[in-house]
Each structure stands twice: as structure tokens, then as C-alpha cells.
Length: 410
DNA sequence: GTGCGAATAT
DNA sequence: AATATTCGCA
Image 1 (tube, rainbow, N blue to C red):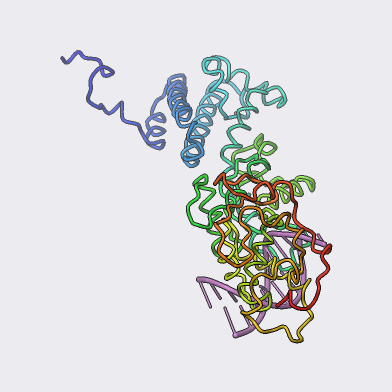
Image 2 (image 1 turned 30 degrees about the vertical axis):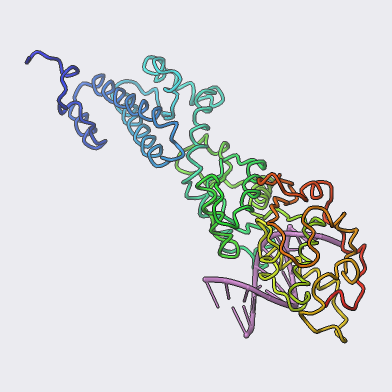
């Protein structure tokens, strides 16, 4: 029994228990023999790197772990290098930490140290190193580069107020949770499409993103968001400790663009059908002058339609229909059924408005499932009568229907 | 905090 | 031009 090697025994012996870095370093410092020191350091580093590999898949969830591990690795490697340089040869003036080990596991032990010098001399040679570095950095930057974050949040905060607007940073700040460092537009767009559907609350989105996004939505407007996109690659090369290194103007612009696109809501396309519902609602409510966005939206029963959208549309509607105060203003009555005529928009505009849901009479229509943002998401419900309409019809044009004052406006 | 309307931005 | 966002107010 006593002869059982530690590896085989089940109990956790001290040697098996992970040491803290400081403890470990202390121990190592007691070792007089340099090679031993180094090998011990290297061994530990190896373990750390293995660990890192293991959590690599979760780096997004565990950014800090990655960071800590990496820090530890870097520190230990530095220590190792120092040991060597102190006692052995002057060779290594600079040790480039990084995970080359990942790829050249063994070669590192044998050759890395030797080659370091070279690498240092010609930074261009260490493709592998750099590549790794970049990869790693890019993942890390997602969450924590303080610099990036602060600068971004700064932008967000200072947002509007023309003062800053000169930068053109729209940062509507709409939540953009964890955008993959290279967020691509496709992604952003999709996110927004989805964002639209949730009126009823549940729409599953990528958790992280969705949450923030919704939050910002529900509060009526922009919200700060943890934005973590950043230049990534370029800086990665030099150090982990976030190097300030300013972005080029071009890069900044790109970033801003990305932010914008990410943040800005997708345009709602007011298809004829949609508009028809809108007008219907208006009529039921007694006219555009008295109807309020919320009421309208409720009457419209359109999935995903927001108050803001209705409000905006109403504003436009009023613009086009205003003037006419005269006699018309007796709510309620004229209401229904005026659609074709007085309506500031002629019926044909809506396409054959009789299709499917057209209830000019003010009778409630089934919920319209509209995913009709300009992007043209297909409606989940599948049914959506007017979907086809939507599909082919673009937003109607206001101007083509010169408003006829009078009753249309009710 | 919400809803609204006007103003402004995109 | 059409829609989105912001802003100030009730």
C-alpha cells in the first residue's frame, strides 16, 4: 500500500493540489539549481496552458479565467526567462510570452527559449506567435480591455448633445451585448429583426444579447451597453496590457459605423396593409388628431409593432393630413368605413385592401404578424395574409396621395 | 415611469 | 421622403 505512487492513489496529496502562483514562486525561489527552477516553472506553465486549452471553448463565458490564466502564464514565463538569463546566458532580453506552446508544445521546451532571441530580433518571423497572440487577444478583448470599454462607454455617455455629435458617433448606445469582436453586420441585423418580434414578451434571442437589447427597448430608448468590440488584432501584437495605440481615423469610422448599424433599429416598412390597419385604427379612434399612438397600436393588432413606430407614422400622417380644422372635428362618428374615400390614402394604395384581413368596418382583425421591417423577415406565424402583400409592396408613398382635406382627417 | 408631440437625425 | 431617435412636457 505504501508503495502506491502518488499518481495512482486517490487521495489528494499536497503535491497534487494546485498551488497559488505566489506559493509556487516561493517554492521555486528556494531552489538553487537553475535548470531545476526553470523546468519547474516550465512544467507549471505547461499545466496552466493546458488548463487554458480546456477552457478555451468557454472563453466567452470565462473571459476572466482566460485573463488570469494568461497572466499567470506570462508571469511564470518571465520568471523562467529571468532565471535563465540571470544564471545562464545573456541571450534573452525579451521573452515573448504568449501561447506558442499551444502549438509547439514540445518545441517550446526545447527550442523556444533558444529561438526567442531570434523572434525578438525579427518580430516578423514569429508568425505563429503572433497568430496565437492575436487569437487570444481577440477573444479577450471581447470583454475586458479596459481601454476599449471606457472609451466606448465614454462615447455612449457623451452621445447626443451635438457637442460630440461632430464625431458622428451615433452610438445610440443601444445595447449590444457581447458582439463578437468581429461583429458582422449580418449578425447585427438579425439581432434587430428579432428584437422586433417581442412585443409580447417572449421571443427568444441569444440570451446575452437579447437581454440588453430588450432592456434598452423597453426603457424607451437607448441604453448604455457593454460594447466590447475593438480593433483587436493590431494591438494584440505588443502586449496584453492593453496598449492604448490609437485607432486610425479610418478604423474609428469603421467602428462607429458598426456601432451605428448595430444599434440603430431597423426601419419598419409600412406596407400598404400595415398602413391600412393604421388608418382603420385611426378611424375607430376618431381621427388622427385624437388617436394616440398607443391606442392605435392596440387596435392595429400587429405583432411586433411598437408605439414608437406608430407614433412616428402618426406624426407623418398628421403632417400629410393636417390643416382642415373646420367642421370635421367630431370624433367617434365618422369613424369607420371611410377608408376608400376620405382617407388620405386611396385604397388602391393598400393593394387590394380586401385581401385577408381588411376590415374596413372597424371590426377587429386578427393579429397581424408582421415581421415587416425593411429587412423583410418572414413572419413566424406563417399565416400572415398580407405577407405577400408586404413582400411585394414596399412602403407606400405618402406623396402620391395628396391629402384631401376634409373628413379624411376626421 | 409612461405616453405624447415636436424636433431632429439618419 | 420615410422612418428612427431624442427631447421636453404633462
